[in-house]
Amino acid sequence: MKILIVSDTHRKNENYLKVIEREKPVDMVIHCGDAEGSEYLIQEAAGCPVQIVLGNNDFFSDLDREKEFTIGSYKVWLTHGHNYYVSMGNETIKEEARSRGINIVVYGHTHRPVIDIEEDVIAINPGSLTYPRQDGKQPSYVVMELDAFKDAHFEIKYV
Image (tube, rainbow, N blue to C red; front, top):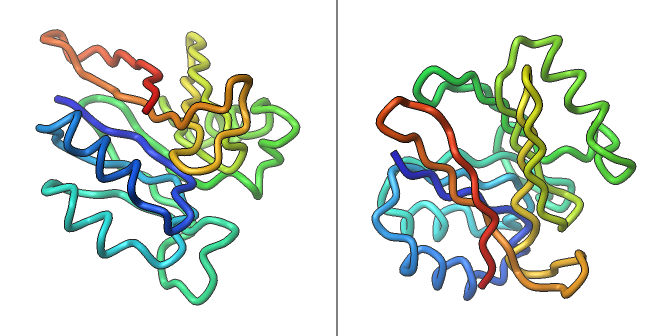
């Protein structure tokens, strides 16, 4: 199973569309918020199930603030992250994930990619496809794949 994880596209969808074409076929797209009204385009271009949540710039949207769902045997929590102080680090969001019995927390907001794997919780931030803020400032996303044993593997990729 192949999952494309993106965030913070901010209504500028050119890189998202490029990444969809590059990574096809994907079984699921996860968008961590700040789509700014592009939800329909994101879903239509994906051609597969899409999980998307409300970001701090998604005004007048009826998207869910957070979602919990499963991928294989993993309990996944999707949130934009701004309500969990992710700009200061990911310890608070990981503690919240632990308290909810979550295996993988997926979040955005910082525009910096992160793959943080600990024994009891995995924290994933794909960065931003539009306004990257990490060193080098390359638009980024994450590909999650479940192998034949249903173990999750993650890779940060750049446009």
